[in-house]
Image (cartoon, rainbow, N blue to C red; front, side, top):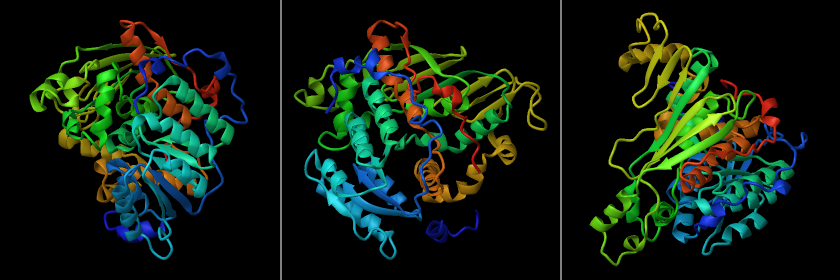
Length: 463
């Protein structure tokens, strides 16, 4: 891969109301037994040699999706939609730059109003639609996409409410379409290494995990009219819980085989710290009459939630996009024979590791990690890592995720993440909100698989 020619390789190869967040927890009509013929745990479709792709939402994140997917062989960008004309035209131009022959030459564009995406879905026959809009539109757009006959690929979180998640499950099953949440962190080099070590039983029995998304993002409040901050800030003000759990939680869930044969999320308790940072930031940086100073920020600066699984394992999940502290996802997985931890990457094994440590009382870290990577590097990273680093996107994890989507669709193989996993990971947000509102009362996870998780094979160590 070190000498691989990048170009040749690619050529070949509106905020919901508070009441809505508490809806959908107990509706027997909506939670009927699963139909094995419709269940999507190991679901795959017939190979799609040329994947016709459409994009809804091409701001910062969506633009990156379109530009990079346009460079992967076997894709054809056929439509782009956004509220703003300039974003659509900018993305169309960059996609066409990467096309050869007829690839990306006939891109239809849609913009100007909140319903343009619906018109796109009726006029363009896409195989896959990538959704990168504000959170409240994720579920409705994914449902509309599947009903229009396309597979849905949705930015995190997959949905905002438990009711929306059940709607997504029912729609995916009835239409027999993929609905994958684009959780890119599962494709990080460290996360793939940890997954491989867990699959090889190097930690023994898995007992505990720690996941987080701690990332100071107060600067987003500068995006008042357009951009992420223009709508996320309202979420931070109105909601109190863990609003963004999946980046840290997704990898931990895959280490533990949550929703796949071994285990399932069972219960959650959640507490939030006082809400101080956003209000103080607004008072310090914006005029008194500015709309950020008219908001009552209810969401605590730091949320801590504790999940208990069916097997009794525990997972700490934290979220903080306000406090002045360094970035971390924790990424800690602890077993009966050792512990793996991130930020910085460090490993410990009972009895140590030959030539690297004498016991579990010392971390294997720094330069010594290279020997661990040499022996236990995930096969997928061995194959794509060098190219992924060149292509970029959060250190290459974005490219690996996008490439795997194309690869699975072209080969007719199951995706690396199924609809149920996206719902389980996203469900932490509304459940944590309900727990915080009830002063830490225990909340139960719905079983979106309706018992079928026991028959779903773990994610394989793909090569």
